[in-house]
Length: 295
Image 1 (cartoon, rainbow, N blue to C red):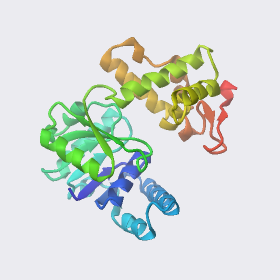
Image 2: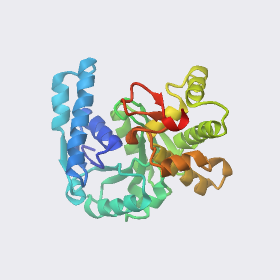
Image 3: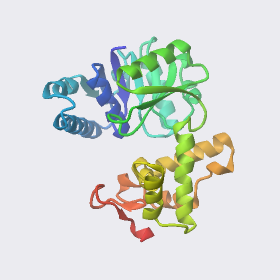
Image 4: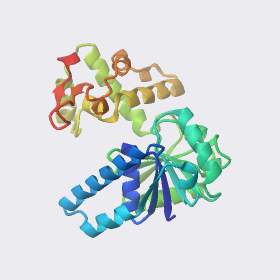
């Protein structure tokens, strides 16, 4: 596979485009919003500058990486020469279904259609296409240029050949791919989200404060950041969506989202992206201050 199309230029999409381009693939980054594409390219350039400063890459590699990325606003045009399409749009089934139909209609018959979804069924997304055997999950971790894991999720109809090709391609990106089956939350979020939800329940029930909960998990369990800070980083709306998918899909009470999480999302406190969650990010993300509602 040489030509990669990435649909969605947000945090995950631009990170995925970055790693493919840096590893020699030709990338077409697609977003309906031209301003979002411009922001994405600036983010990629900024992240490459960090790698240059750390002497991980040189200026020539940075220039070559940027030159391998094209951008466009049309899915139809953007996928017509793709060997692999990676959808990285918002976690919304209706939106993703519409995108998968358009990908299927316009990509070459041989193209593999992948999704970066963190929880939506691969089998369900494959049902929007005429090529379910060529639909697969590639769940990258955030931040994509740094995190090594890629969960590679096999849908009900995904062929072994497609699985092997995606595993091999992930390895060529310098990632460590792990094959998992298509069940709500896959593996990463099936384990992570209940932990985050339990941390929110612990706060909700007054057992400890934000700083205390995160400190226990960082110092006691050697986590690089506490679960409440991590929830802010992921986005509380995303956490809520994944928990609801898991609660519905598995039918177990342990996946029911904490009422505090529901209320925070309803109130627009989504974490880093909104400037406030369990922490206040109005002064930037380097200095964490417990948000006013928990002071």
